[in-house]
Each structure stands twice: as C-alpha cells, then as structure tokens.
Length: 372
Image (tube, rainbow, N blue to C red):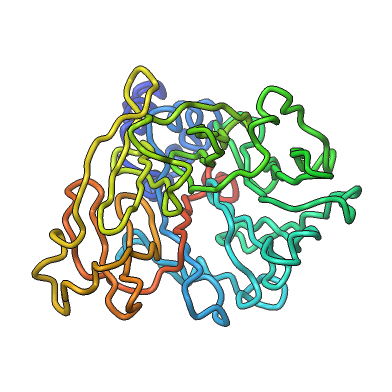
C-alpha cells in the first residue's frame, strides 16, 4: 500500500462496505487513519454508503426497566455500549419517543403527552448512548394553560464538513402544540433555544392530527378529509398528499405507517381481520399494493383458533418490514406479519408499540488516535 498514491488509497477506502469496517480500517496504520479522518473523504464516503444501523430501541411492557436495546447483529454490536443507565435517575424513568442518527429523543414518564399531562410541556432530553452524553431540552417559555402539547420530533441540523447531519452539537427538536385551538410549531436549537416556525400553508389542516408512525426519516400523520401530512426529518418542513378514495379513511381507527424493507413508507389499515397496505407510486399518488386476510395467513400457527378473528385485531408493534398483532380476545397469542411476503409467524417477544432505529455515529471518532 505504500506505493499507492493518496488518491488511489482514497478510492479503495471509499469502497469499504460499512462504517464499522471503516473504523477497523483506520486502526491498520497511521496513513490510513489520516486518510479516513480527512473531512473530504468522510463527506464522500457518507454520500456513497447508507448509515450503519447499530440496533433498535423499544420501550417494551416492563416499563420499570426502561427502554430495551436490540443489536442489529449481536456478533458485531455489544448491547452493553448502548445502555441508558447514564440518564438522570437511570434508564427506568425514561421513554424513547423519537430517534435520528445516533441520537434518541426521550420523555420522562409521568410527564408525557397523555391525559392531563398534555397541558404541560414534558420533561425532555436528547442523548447519544455511545458517548453517554445528554442535553436537557427546556420547556417553551410561553407554554401556558391555553396550550396543548401534541408531539416533539428530532430534526437534522446543518450538515457538517464531514457530511454528518445530526449530532449532540447540532440537533434540532421540533415541537407541535396548539394554543387556544390553533396549531403552532416551534424549533429548539442549542444556539438559539426555541423559535417559532411558520406553517401558514399547512396550519389549517393540522387541527386534530392522528400520528401514524415514521419511515425513511420522516413522520406521518392523518387529518380528516383523506389528507396525509408528512414531516420531513431532514428539513422540518411539512407537505401534504391525498389518500385514495377506495378507503373510508375517516372511519379507520387502526391505521399506521411502517417502513418497508426497501426503506420506503407503507400505509397499513386494519378492518376486522383484513389488512391492506398502500405504497406511494413514482407519480406521488398512493395505491393499494397488497392485502391479506389475517385469519387465513395465521392458519397453522401454534395456538391458532378461528374464534380469534371473530372481532378485530389489536396492533401491538411495528417496525421496518413487520407489524405485530394480537386478537382483541387474548393478548397471549401474538403474531407478526412480514410486510414484504404477507406471511405470518408467532411474535418473538415484547417490543412495545414503536421501534426506534439507532445508527452508528457519524463522523466516526478517529481524531484521538491520529498521532499514533
């Protein structure tokens, strides 16, 4: 490798298959470390490779233990490095409500947006599990008795010279809240605290949104009139689209957005024992992609009984490429549907309602060893 030019070495290193492998390559020698730590190289590498997923957090049912981390590859990722025991009071009092990059957005239990708590701003923090660091997010200064809290979301900051979009130094938190019945949006940054965001073009639609889930770094919500609202996690901007009239969306209480294995959003609806899945076409419109009769898909699974489908199904959890359900009659018989094949299998374990992705931090921490 000593006879290889710096440009040629850069081209070789750009083809390293993952961020974790890149960190290992940086340990080979001082020259490789310098080449990999170069901001221009890191920016090019980030543009060529998808982020490496370290694993997934879910809140689970045993709430006293706090969120649970499940590594994407147990043989490569040590789950102990993703413990949340460094948070104030330990992991137990906290709930994950959003994730982006390597960061988690968390609420302290008992201060979240349910019931009477929605009339006060929840105790909120942003943390990076790998660096064991966190920042408390202060409440909105003018959040008073006329306000109603709807949701907080993590949003990218400005892109740094290494191509990183979000970290503990540049994250943003977007808050949706209503004041005297009118929806407002504010954005928190470390440099300027909270500031109002103009949503005049979308505000009339956002009176009573139903939050459906996230996919591809964006969040989705439904409002009456077959309108789907998308919040772009990169920019913090809102856009809207119209859902197909083949569904009576306003009557659908069981509707959610999950991410397909292709990284694109899927809208799933549940009615009795039928699940329909919609995908967005290249032209931007939504269309029915697949449909499955759950009573047929689950036939043959251990513990199956036809009576389980005499009423509807309860949505327990969803994540990339799957949804987990159980019959209204019994929570003991849980099963998952593969959104790609529409095949069923018994659920592998308790995962709470939402599953939150955690990526390997970018850029990698290489600078500490550059002079070795």
